[in-house]
Length: 102
Image (tube, rainbow, N blue to C red; front, side):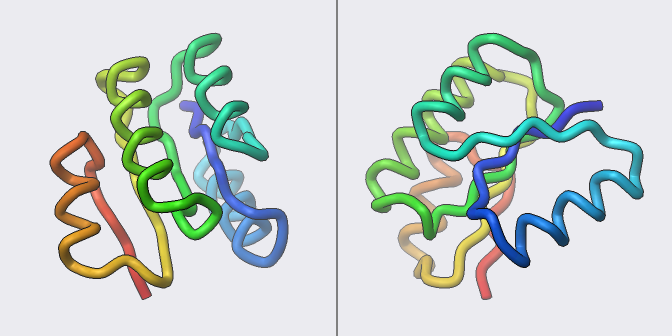
């Protein structure tokens, strides 16, 4: 199984990579919204993990919407420190499967 991640390089990225590796998932990493879309067009992924703090909110919404179109059966997860309830609901409406905030 393969997970596409758009997460800043740092502690969170290392923890995610360690957890995915322990669960025997392969991980493709994107450094930008454009790389994430390109990777989604080139390969099928079982899941996509997006750190929405890397993007302007409208870019995060557009990315989730495009990914849902490109990877229709992939699970799309959004993590953030700053999303309010209305923003999370907006992400669900365009195709996110879960939003984790904290």
